[in-house]
Image (cartoon, rainbow over all chains, first blue to last red; front, side, top):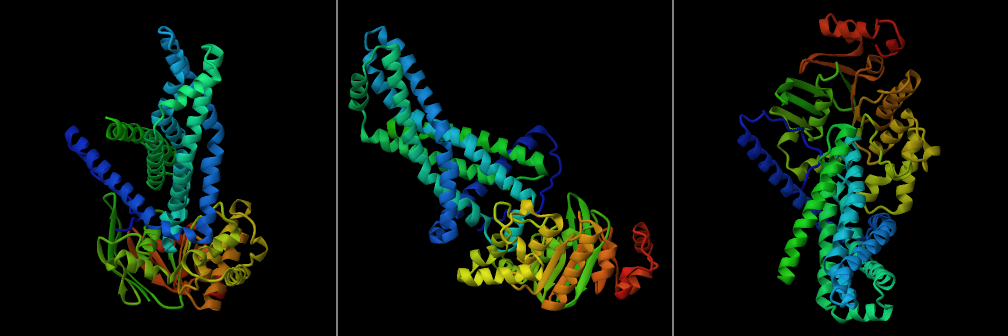
Length: 273
Length: 252
């Protein structure tokens, strides 16, 4: 069933008691989750249309806006994440004269968890918030309604290119973030813990398995799908002008964070437990 | 061409439309006037299938819009062009790209043909020189013209105008009125205009329908409208200092 963004406003009577309010909230949330999944399915269905010149140009534009423009913040956050990891683990390992092992500790943490997680969080807060605000503004300024009236599917025009662009860029950004984290760890290892570059790199690469790389990349891909779906869906739900855009953006970031945390746990459980 | 049969619609427990009957003839300009919140825009949304009535039927050339599936509604919308109150131009596209959007997204037309079609529509609305400008660089009147060019790009049979002169100065408003009238005459389209502006209504309307309290309380020609003895109509006319004398005399 195709999703219709411009809907009649929904009004409901206030519930009679608190249980009724909770029940209604759960029903509404389930319904919206279902709509978000339909939105994702619709966006995936439109992917074959990417060969159109306009769609391809929009994908490249979004790869630049969402991906390349996030490089600086990902670089800074990842380097410092690696440095903190190295310092914390290094201080403990030094008690056992095992500080040379910080390389593997940082590499494993970054590849398996911190790289994709930090990338997902950064993208949710920056790119996802921007998507939600943009969609929300388009809803309140009737641009989305205009598209629907012209029989131009907003999901094909707006969501699909963003999904494809971020699906390409997020795993790359995540891997880049891992490398930056390892570099940050190496700097701390060398300057604070006296671990040589060679020992750090040898140690970091010895214990890495292919599985660590592909699970990390899979997580990054999953997180990007979550961020794009949640942010665009929340944007499309916007009502009440500028205040509504602010609310949608906030909800988009909060819900993306929660979904990233919860799904990240389950992916780890499936692959490593 | 467009018919409302006893259409009722409640939003938030309030009856916005209450048994509305309406007949809009092909090739006419039907102007819907009325106070804020009277249900003017809701009426337009029913024509486009954006809203479904709680009771009654909305027909376009005998086809019942409110009984259509999503795909059927998409099909019938191809016959409509809509000028939104805010013009609803896509902000990151320039005027030319905005006007070309329906053709680029829905047809396999060559770039050259699209460019030609866009230029001809922009010429029609007197905006050819602004083809590479972005919406943020346009005045209110220019935005409406660009919105109208986009509404016309697929050669619709019916054009819906939602408050086309709102937020414009009187000079720009009259130029938009002329444009609406010229568009109807040149392209022989059916126009439905929703407005507060009685000057506009009297200048461009072939028929004027007044909506009040969810009901159509008057449907008449401009000449009949200014002479109406209906209480709500008289109050509306007097609030805008409308008498039988004025520039609309040419139309009444």
